[in-house]
Image (cartoon, rainbow, N blue to C red; front, side):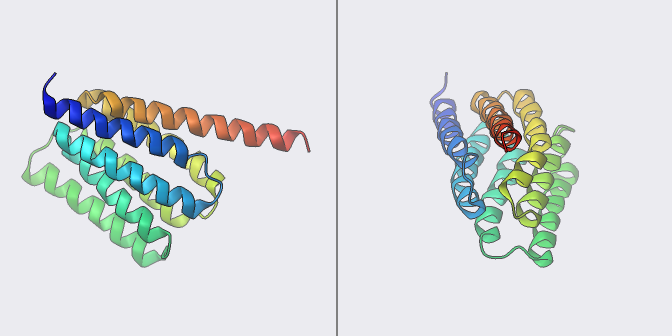
Length: 172
C-alpha cells in the first residue's frame, strides 16, 4: 500500500474515533464541535484519496458545524446549500466528475439542513440515518476503507442511541 494511502486511512481512523464520541453527546453544540473535528479529518482522508465530492462536502460540513454552534438562521442555511450546489455544479459541469458525486452531495445537503435547522440531538440522529447511508454507498464506490468504517460506525452509533432512548422512554 502506498504511503499516501496509509496516511489517508490514518485520517479516516481519526475521524471514526471522533465521530463515535460525537454521536454520543447529548448537548447539540458539543456534538457539533466534536463532529467538526471528525469531519475535518475525514475531509482530509477523502481529498488524499482523490474523492473530491466527499472531500468538499465534509470540509463544508466541518466549517458549517462550527458556525452552527453560534448561528443557525436561514441566511446560514442558504449559504451552505448554495455552496454545496455550486461545488456540485463545478464538479459535474467543469471537472466532468462521475455520477456518484450526486450521492455525496445529496448526503452533504441532508447534513447541512439537519445541522442548521434541528436543535435537538435526537432529531439530528434520525435524519442523519439517510445521510450516513448515502455516505456509506459513496465510500464503498470510491474504495475508502475508513470512509466505509466511518459511515458504518456512525449508523451503528445512531441506531444504538435511538434504541437506548426508546428503551428508556418505554420504562417511564
